[in-house]
Length: 180
Image (cartoon, rainbow, N blue to C red):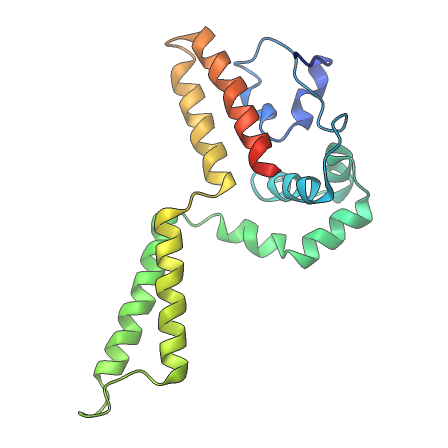
């Protein structure tokens, strides 16, 4: 099944606006598809955090939601903090977590002999740090998948444009499925 719309609507799709230069055929309009509120919320968050669109009215128009909903989602999900955190690379975040863990372990080692163990609070912090480190090592966020997809398409386009276009279609579908 092939979905087609006007070229101007390409930028309304979550991933689709990243591949304007590669894509030759028209793409589905995100607003035309019936997306759940959860999908709209995730798309709106990506527009705010990754694309830098901070005007709620524009985000609302793109995801087919009310400006009030966008404002509520942004506040509830703390988009501003998330956007700032995205400025840190994965490596920087990993290094920060590892430094915190090393500092905690060093603090515990500085305790008097016979008391060099973590109390309940320190043990809880250590468990959380280890969990965060493991998650950062193993999970790729949707934003990272999108960024990797963009880099791959940019690299492949001058080498094999038809393959880049096909891969763009596959990346688009993968990202849409990931939002569900």
